[in-house]
Image (cartoon, rainbow, N blue to C red; front, side):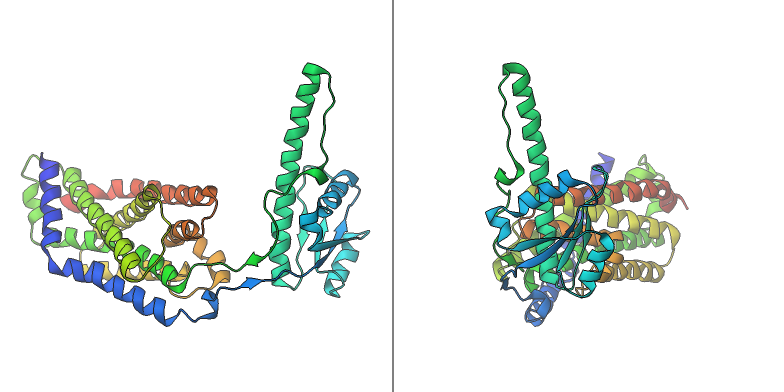
Amino acid sequence: MRFWHIFWHELSYWLKERSTYVQFILVPLIMIFVLGSSLAGSEVFKQEDVILPVATVGLVGEGNESMAQAFTQFSQHEEVSRYITIEQISTSAALAEQLRLQQVDYGIVIPKQEEASIQLLQGTNHVINLMMTSIVNEFASASAMHALKLEADHTVEDRSGEEQGTSLQDSEPLVSMGLISSESVTAMQYYAVSILIMFLLYAGLRFGSALLVEERSYTLKRMQSTPARPREIIYAMMLAHFILSLLQAGCMIVISAVVYGVNWHLHLGTVVIACGFVTLCSLCIGLIGAAWFRQSKTLHTFMQTIIIAMVAASGGYVLIPEFQQAAGVYTLPYWGMQIFYNQMLNAAPAATQHGLGILALWAIILGGLSLYFSKKVVTR
């Protein structure tokens, strides 16, 4: 009962504050509109279909004739042969030289060891590089399917004595080739996600500031004279701010979809889990900051610096793919945003699950650190 009384008191206090609705709902919606509408014409968010050119691919076998023959067979499939032509090259050095002279558009080196990975040498044409990455991935998938079929055929042979088999060339590609679409999220979608994640991170600042306010008014010290334990006080307040952030996320998603026409393509479970992990990590950071600093201004500077730096590194303000891949992947907002973008682009579920796994790891690490500091905030 003590826990829920503290929780409800904190939640009702913030729900009654008018500034809550202005700062955490109205302001982010205005930012989404301003950024999304002003940058809608940017080159980054223009969407158009690109007709694929026919690429000349240099292939080096390096003694692994079986795999080289398998790739050659795969390239002869109707859906693949329209886009690539294979040119056999004797050595890797000769392939590199032809790539440098642009005599071939792309290079593939088949390793001698079957366990080794195929070496891919990209050319100067970005569209061809994307197309060949897709084709090579398709070849790997077809090879795996072919291996499974052979294994099943051998099992049938052992049982019935009948020989069955298929060639890699007869295997249908899992994905039909045609146009590489530069399909991406719109500017409004992009900034709706980035602003959503940014304001979920501000939950930690709100929570940490609330702790310092209660500490300065000696409320936390007076509560120690009650049967409530220090961690019980902290976690009740944390749960209240956690619920507030989820309500904020729900309002932003619904209003942006209705007013701005943002197509989220979201599953409710994924939204709740992703927002929950991001909010939990933010609350843990806010708790650690409240334990380190005793002044609200210092805490604000600390949290603002962390939030702005992480969102900027993850591409939340300006989309710079090279910088995102170099630094953004190590930040919390990057994985939160990628989950939403994958949902918007109907990406494979494995990509979303990978992002949720990274967020869960962040939550475990920060949650463990916050356990150490939780008692210190109340008892110091």
